[in-house]
Amino acid sequence: MDLHELGAFLKSRRDRIRPSDVGLPGGPRRRVPGLRRDEVAHLAGASVEYYTELEQGSGAQPSEQMLAAFARALRLDLDERNHLYHLAGRPVPPAGSAASHVHPGMLDLMSRMPHTPAMVVTDLHVALVQNSLARALIGDESAYTGRRASLVYRWFTEPAERRIYPEADHDYHAHAFTADLRAAVARRGSQDEEARHLVDDLIKASTEFAELWAAHDVAVRRNDRKRIVHPTLGTIEVNCLSLFSEDGRQRLLWFTPAVGTPAVEQFELLSVIGTQDLTPEYGRG
Image (cartoon, rainbow, N blue to C red; front, side, top):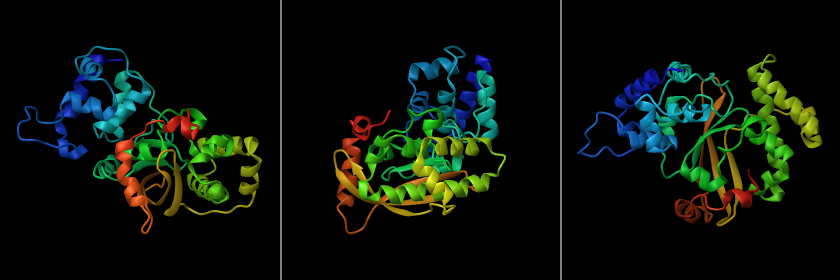
């Protein structure tokens, strides 16, 4: 671990970014060419004091999750992200984990959607990053690690996870998750251990999944209309749209209110309500 090099690298990446690149207002009286330290800390979910210590070449070794947050806040490309991990003395996260690299273009697009719930997920349904409205709509996905980071795994192994959708829609979503997962597994190839282990674990843990998997249905989940049960706002009808990365391993999801429903007014209340009490109501954690 080389904290002095790490600090210098973080500062160099911070200096090159304009506030508008990450969805922040520029303002006429800025005294630094790029982002301020407090802005990077805010974007990464870190304290200003901790980020300042890192730039000054001191402080505790950052975790893999914290490094992933800094990489996303600073819009690092893949080589830069890997360099950041090397400087911090941490192993580079495997593709598909919750700390996976997110393409800067997806992050840039998501930052330009401040009034729309949006998130980036992997093809195995691991949430990589959410904006505040997405957390307010469906709950905070950042706490899940290991196998439970995959929404598909939780869907078939944790009944409380299904509270987010009306019971009448559960069969539809179970089938859609399975068909989408089959497409992802085939696209990754038979040598991909992450996908293979996920399917093996699901077959062992869920009879429902095993039966659906045996049907060999396949369908990429590109666009969808969903009913989301919110603990405060009630049932919200949304359109869920997707933008895929070139290799298909990541997708930017965003939610829009369904026309002709109360969803428009419900969306306006999301930013006011925030994420209060979503975790216990949805049975998450």
